[in-house]
Image (cartoon, rainbow, N blue to C red; front, side, top):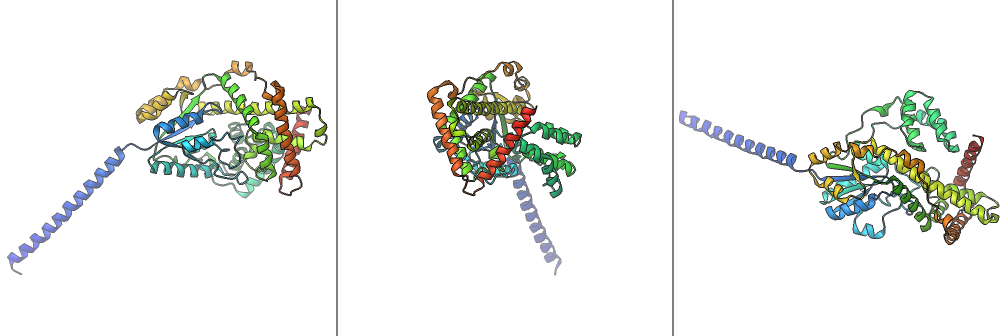
Length: 451
């Protein structure tokens, strides 16, 4: 090759290399611009709405969805199950038609979900809503569900067979007797770390008490930092609706309990139990409302002389059941406020203040963080009001105040008891479950009398 030809060859090669370099540089710049644009683009917002029972969470969530084009993801461990309608206070057909709801009627109470299963399903629902351009609004009163969704599940491995057996042996006698205080004392006797875990739990949370024992027996693995928050790709706005008047909230809870009974809660519970869909092992059988209803119905069903009870005795038994249902519901609301007072991830918003809630969601991230960090006084207001707690007096339940209502309520109770009695010989396990519950109630009563 001549020198001229050699030079032309080198020039051609250099030009090709230059073209490749320019193309690579242009591609890199385009990629960089896309990355910058993606990082600068606002994340999709997700609203997580919590609050005590009967404070108005559902109404606030529906209003948000209507204004934002959102959909509701339920964080309620009872609304999750089919058939648990009245006691779960599920959204009405009209509300579901107006705003799409996710994780309502998603499972059967005889096959309970774990918190981890719910969390995975909730993330999938959030992703689905966001992918279709909607705003996911997560709403519900189950505290553990909200915490796991916002912060991530604790990184605790499944229990070993040995620790599960040991935890069951330690707690079974106390759970059968309904002796929560005794169970906590037994766990605390195992050591300081056991005691600390037990003290952090809500009363009668037997599942988590067993898990606490299992985790400690397996070396305290649950003390590791939680996993990455499942909603890390989103702009998550958390709000806790705080009641302005604690006494008014408690009266509202009482009224809601009365309304559930008037709508047929006892009949719902009896039908589920008779069909084997509310076994003792289910989480639903321990849920507030269902637990008290089962206790009342099982005692009535097993009382050989029940049909001969005088009107006064039948009335007293029913009113006592109403009182226990109301009290458990109010206590749970107090636990919810105590829980979220400690949870700085949730901004405290006055219940019923739709404008404040809308502003919390509409503002930019910096505004939200400043609002959340500056709500110390509102958070302190969630502390128990000792004066209210001491002076609060429930108004008489419907059955105690109105003879016509009493007759209607007692007729519904009699019909529910009849359903349980008719199911006694069907061999579906309902009778055995009732026998287990009755034995536990009798042990609990004897323990109370001895004390």
